[in-house]
Length: 207
Image (cartoon, rainbow, N blue to C red; front, side, top):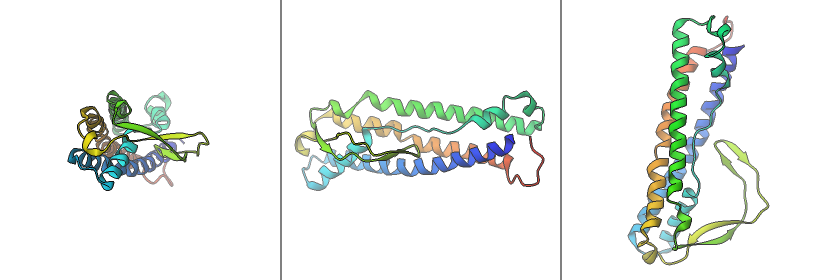
């Protein structure tokens, strides 16, 4: 049934948000530490490690991917709309609109860091690293057998700290990707409003 599908879809979406939110928190913690280490202009093993951990975060960006097929069905199919009380139609329509707006904003926040890419800095070089699997928005990406490279400092921190472009790469990433948790939180509220509608479905007559 349509409302049951929406209930299951919403629970799946909340689980994805929980997973990605935790991953984003780790990345957002690394980048300010890297900025502080870079701005210190002190070449220590700890500062190098902090900067390179930050580089591993800013070489990629994140957005929010959720399922919307069940919600789309309930807010567009005339036969299903006819069975819904006005309050349900209004809430589902509002939640769908808000989720779409938040998705658009998250996509924007994902794209902007690509304006200031760290790999353009002359203070960085490449080194081989072992290929490994990873997760993207809750999806397991299997281990790759191809050779991979990671960015590393080519010079000492007291020289790299004078590269404004490198510093701006960290700032741009943090400025826009730092908004993603706010979008997570707002999206979670909308999903919880949908769960208030779907609720426990046992014994209920639903569309």
